Length: 81
Length: 239
Image (tube, rainbow over all chains, first blue to last red; front, side, top):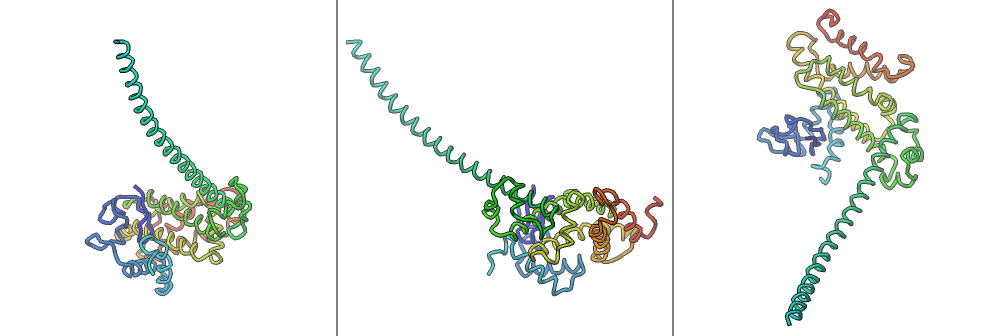
């Protein structure tokens, strides 16, 4: 089973990569809230910004800009105005 | 009389058969026409996908050989065995081709890393997996990092995503070893940037470190060993 998370673009290769470990879901564990529902756009931007700061030490503003650009082409957000 | 009756029965059977046969064949004909149309559509789709794939593979080769900015679409078309115009039927602009190729490359790297790395692997194994994955695309990756600041923003965004995914894999593995006191405690970002800085330096100056063949295959163990010694609380070679 191999899918790409529609919210953040992460490849989901293993069962545990999916929201609630449910392979029928189209989004990953990081883009799911505790109850398994999909996070909102703002929550995803904030999550990805934090991830870029933590994983690569980016400046917060640069990380947010990169997060917005990264999410722009993903299926969950590409038709967003 | 009997013969006439037989003839009538026979005739009506024939007529009945004729009706059935023609209806049967008409339905079969329309089915086969449909499946023929499907087959043609399928074959066109497959051919299109095949050409798309060939163009991506050819572009990867030329980006590697001629540089990402220097590679010419005419050469990419020639190697893929298609006309120059076909490139633009699949990718309206050169930048779109470049972004698709780099996205495809990024997905191959992250997929392989995610598939090959388990949660209970140590940091050393993660580093070796990272180098083994990169060594498959070593020259393309070296071009990518050398030219990155001049490439379209979408390509830069892809690289940032790949790096964050690698950083996360490294830290997930290192965390347990940090808790056990085997390696130094440090932020996820420093664990990653120290490693990637080392790899990028060697790749960007490959001509000084490895005259022929794969640098990562030949000297990867040295990079892993020395990095491990930098982050370890003890000497890994003592083990």
